[in-house]
Amino acid sequence: SGALAGAMTKAVLAPLETIRTRMIVGVGSKSIPGSFLEIIQKQGWLGLWAGNEINMIRIIPTQAIELGTFEWVKRAMTSAQVKLKRIEEAKIEIGDISFSPSISWISPVAVAGASAGIASTLVCHPLEVLKDRLTVSPEIYPTLSLAIPRIFRDDGIRGFYAGLGPTLVGMLPYSTCYYFMYDKMKTSYCKSKNKKALNRPEMLVLGALAGLTASTISFPLEVARKRLMVGSLKGQCPPNMAAAIAEVVKERGVMGLYRGWGASCLKVMPSSGITWVFYEAWKDILLAANTKPVL
Image 1: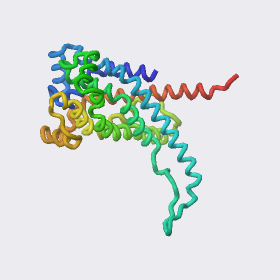
Image 2: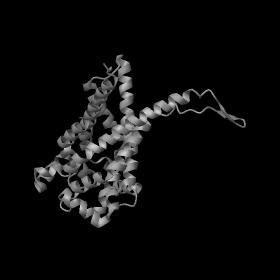
Image 3: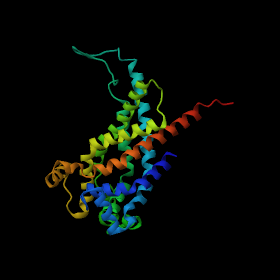
Image 4: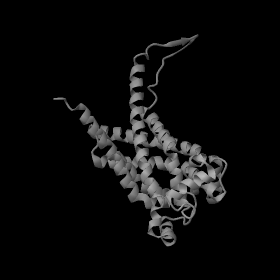
């Protein structure tokens, strides 16, 4: 059900994703309304859903891998901390130096969030490449069935992993912050209200805020990543992420690093909120099924 909800959310928010991607890479108008009208004039209403087909395909494995990895790593880290806590009193001595083995200072949620982002990116990156090509250059890549053989013919298998390094660099702070912020806000809110769990509207709001925070912090890296991934289409691909950031600042100033941020927030906030609502709901259902007594 979580994957279905994610697919429905992607379909509804696809126009914002299209506008966001075009603004980030510097294609067309600099404003959301201007970009909206420009797409309709040149491509018709369906142009707002350019790349949505691959988005619908991408969301199911991406969410399954990301949320599954997050839950598994979080549990593994928490279990490891509990086991190591038992031997924290035992000090290791090397000469005059002694220390206690401990990983209690490491946040399981932060590590799990980073791992989730890395795992989903490694597996699903080719789908992200296809989405960006369909969105930014529909005249070259009009359909998914034509985009796949064309990329393979021009660049081989490596073409589907173009920009993987920058994507991982950009995903790491976003994914870590996203999961960490949601967990911290959830814990703090429940503690302040003296309650054990969030209700669905509270999950929606906190999930949206976590998405907003993570997107704002990592957005300059997202701008650089998109420029690297799509720049090769124009023959103007910067050599690395630092060069891409410097290029954006030179062309548009520091605020250029946040071009498309508004459209991104309009897309990320509802998407993040809905993701957490269905994730928590599905987890509750599974836990209830596992703890149901056998008659």
